[in-house]
Image 1 (cartoon, rainbow, N blue to C red):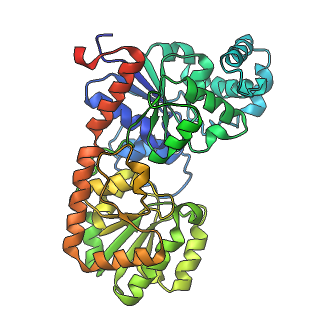
Image 2: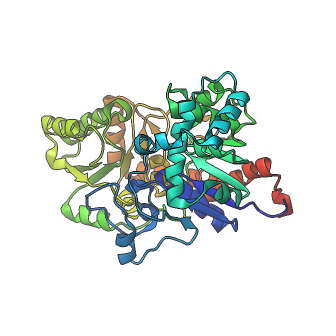
Image 3: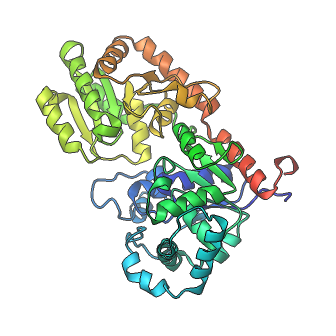
Length: 440
């Protein structure tokens, strides 16, 4: 193939498909994004439209609100023929499963998959359940076979590689964004099929450094996967003035921290952060402000702890922020507090560093040395005492904050930028399609 491949991105979880297609198009590659996820953070409007959320149903479409603000989806975003937030992987099973029992092609596909992976305990109902999901998918976007075959390569996100496995599409790239940690090892229909899909992919894109252990557990070798960072557009996430920052300064706050992470104490360590911030307010900065994301299963526990610690005046709850609003909040903050248990990062840390804001979080260097030639300038803190110590240091030392923020921006530009993402995606496509970048 002497031209760049035509690429379809399927399954726009957290706008990863949208962003990767956008980056590829910026580089002159014909790439489309099929957006079949209904949650607000997985709609393109959440990433690029100048809107507020203002509460409401998180599964409701944002297109009309964005259009009123002057933003419309690009023509390369493939949208459903109708808006149907019931497009879950389970919803249609009860109504469609019986209708699919006599589908000859599913029976043939089941037999084919059994022959291809005789050691996998695949059940006929697994394939029928996946067929029910595919059936509903096709009701919204048209027949998958002709659609997929009109592209040189399909890149599928989350558990969407199952659709490619089911249709027998070749070649395809599987993109994991945390979905490889546990899902392919679950004893259920999508666990078994997802493990097969990862093994059958032309290439697996790993975005979370720690899941390389899961890749090895699946039997994947270094030639089967490639590390590519989460797509973060550093041309948009960058230092700049902040409307929110001017407002907070006028209100008299002299140190501002923001934590955009959801409230999940067992995964994010939200309680550790709150206890550390309370110490900062009590001993060092009575006019410090902590902005929190009003999102997560344990918001109630966090609110109760804040009241118990006596820092309600110093905490401001924010509704989940569309990304243009979040950029303004990153710029307004003196530090960003991410999570304090996992040891690796998703999108929050590189987004914040791209905006020139220091990041405090649990960071395990050993998890990242295999995929980054230089480790990011993240402040590694885990316990309330460590978090407090670094908050106090940075609150007192504006020069240290500026130096750390500039180092973070520089690191993102060199090791997490959009061009690096494009280069690695094209290299993966070269392997699975035969396209040579040197001939383009």
